Structures are given as structure tokens and as C-alpha cells.
Image (cartoon, rainbow, N blue to C red):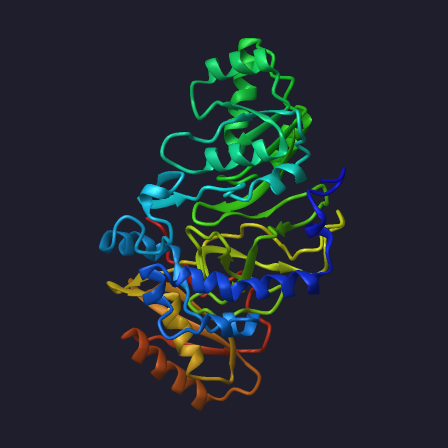
Length: 411
């Protein structure tokens, strides 16, 4: 560790990082395929050939939303665990419920870098207000704090009076948990006249951190950073002192793909976050998180050279019901795939004459009425529903990751 960076990996040349990740990936995929779930999912794949982003992008996605059903069919982990349950460090149950194992080893959740980037250092006392009941976040962040050389108060959630008593006694300098609960703690301390002034830094996730809340917490003495994490992969990206973006964690390969497909989008375009990890006990190969984000150009002003993303920008799963039938992003993507002259497409669902109606806007450089009619026929063939088609100029649709926009009035 240096004063500014967790280790030299954070400041290496991007080409060196890319070469290292893809040199390690074939062995990671071979290890994953020792698990029956991955062997089925990646049937026919030769791990030795997966040595670039272009080849990786041809592998199927494992959708986080599919894990619940897969785990019901093959308990407890859908067959995606290399390490047997009895040899894991901990066994978790996240909302859904979705079940996850925690591997033995060094900082399994990849939290230490994020904590370091938030200004937390050896000797700090960290007040951990993630839940210690069944879910992984508290243990991931506790392990990361221990890697840094910090003591941890296992506060959990709720019971604010006892938490404030502990804080007054132990004087924690750092907080980890949701941003909402930090505000609850500070508000309760102010109301009860208890001392919570020791909190100086915070690393938060699990809930939105709007600029107004970040500003309020800062004005109350707590400089807060946020990170983006999922239970299956740990911390995917984290903030630093630089003013913009989240930096991708070192032990992960991140892709942004067009919702409903596994196809990577251009840098700057909003799409679904897909992550590949190197966890030997519970590897994830192209896990589609269901979250939207976009890659930011350039590198961080803090000196870390890994890819930056904009952070969480909404949900990619935009499935909606039209006239009693589900329409999915995958279907809209299939319509576009059948007409290669199209770029970005967006299906808007509205109400006309007290009935559901669909309008597909499609970016096209050289469109004509015949093409619009052909796309409408494809839309009906794929979705089993009729819809209008409007051809629009390239780059005219919003860059927000939406493939389906439900604009029907609520209520």
C-alpha cells in the first residue's frame, strides 16, 4: 500500500491489465467448468480459446434473474459452485431468495480497495451497519476492513440507541452500510444529544446516494464514497477522491451490453452491466447483473487506470405486459437483429382508445416505407402483437439503456 493507492495494480498500464486478465481467464473458465452448472452452461466451450473480449462476448450470459429458478432446480447453488457447500466459509441467503457461498481466502468480496479509496486506513475503527443476518455484505466489508488492519464494530441494522452507545464508546472514524442508515444514526444522535462526531468517512452501497444526501452528510462531517456491488461478485466498482465515476475493481472483467442481448455496446452507451470474476470457489462467467451503467472515457484523476463507469443508472430488465402478454428486451433485440440496417431501437408502450399500443422507434440511416412495414411484420412475428414502426435518424434515440419504455398512465 502507498499513501494514495492500495497497490501497484491500480496504476499499471491498461494494456498490461488487459493482458493479465485474459492470460488468467482460460484457467478460470476451466476451473468453473468443473462445476456441473457451468459445464452445462458452457457446453462445447474450449477454455483455452477465451483469450480476448471479442471471444468472451460470444459466451452465453448467466442472468442474475435466472439464478432463483436454477437454484430451485439444483439446490443450493444451481450447480455453479466449484467448492462443495460444506467446505465454504459461510453460506448466505439474499432476498429472492438467492443463495450464495463465501469462499475461504483473502478479501472474498473485494472490498479492501473500495474501503482504501474511501480514505479508510490501518488503525481506523469501522462501524459496520450492514446486516449480519444471512446476507453477505456485512461479512464482505468486515473482511475487507481486516485486510486493511482495521477494527470492526459489528453494528448490523436497527437498534439505533445501542449503536450510538457503542459509537460513543469506541469512537469509530468510519462507517460502512447504506447511506440511509447513516443519516438515521446521525439524526438519532442529534435528537438524543449523543456524540457521533467521530464519524469522518463512510463507504456506502445498497441504496441510492443522491447528491442532496451526499451533501448533507458531508456538511455533518462525514465524507461519503459509494461502491457498486452484487452478492455473487462482491465489489464491482468504487469511487475515489476523483470527482467523477466509479473505478472497476482489479479482479473483475466488466462488460456493458445491449439489454436483451450479450452484445457489448460502444463506450459511453448505456447498457447492462456484465461481470466475470476469478473467485475459484464460486466463479461468475458473464453474470448479467440486471443493472444499467455506461463506460466513461479516459482514466480517473486519482491516478487509478482501470475502466470507469458512471455508476448505477437503473434496471435493465424492462419486461412489460402488453394486452396480457409479456414483451421482453430479448424480443426487441431479436427484431433489430433481423434487420441489420437498424442501429438503436426502442419500443414504447402507450394507451390508445383504452387499449394497449406499441410503437417501435428504430434508428436507420436510409429507411423507407417498405422497410418500416417489414420491421412491423417482424415485430408481430416475434412478440405475437401488432405494433407501429417509426424510422428515426441515427443517434436520435435517448442514450439511457431503455429498450422498452412503458408510458401508460398509472392508476
